[in-house]
Length: 274
Figure 1 (cartoon, rainbow, N blue to C red):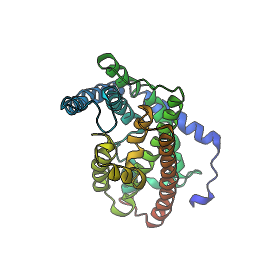
Figure 2 (tube, helix red, strand yellow):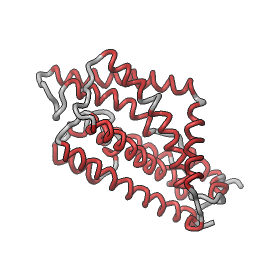
Figure 3 (cartoon, one colour):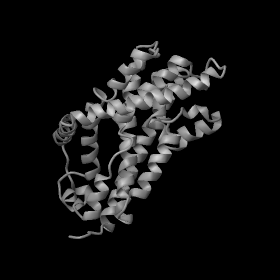
């Protein structure tokens, strides 16, 4: 069945999102383990940030200590929401040929997986995001946004970040249509998204021209860096709105690329072992 012939409905998407929420809600031990792991790395990351501040600077790249604390701890929580690093489930289904079952369903596989992923992200937002933030707030002074609108903008930015990250992960998995083994692209995504996306350190630690180029020309900062900049209110209100515009642009571009790659992949599909 061709992707253009599928006729999805809003109820189907809502059902898929609800299923994604319920699926991850059953893995309570995994959720607790993820919160503990992300919190441990939060202490390590913030220790590095404190070392930079202790070198004599009151602010670094436009962040003061409370802003850096929020950047680190909210970032550790946001990792679980956007699901920065994920297993290669789709790639494995492509390798084994089980993806044929997905293609026979009356809904496009891209939108099917996106709906389920948004449901998963909803559950992660009330567990894996909140957990590290609470732990960080108990130990350090976190930055509280000064404008109520910032909270709404952050929610919007986090939603856009989740979609961008989904699209990137989908493209990594879809590489299996041609390579049959997506571990190489997945390793590239893991390393690049960490370095250029704001996980290990804020992108603004780079020279301003390079940081701006990364934010505008690559999708990586749209996943972690931009939502956190919105939350800590770095820069002017106009600059933060512009950042959301960059995210929205990447959402459109990434999803369009996902659909194009999926259509090409269906023509290239090689069934292994079946």
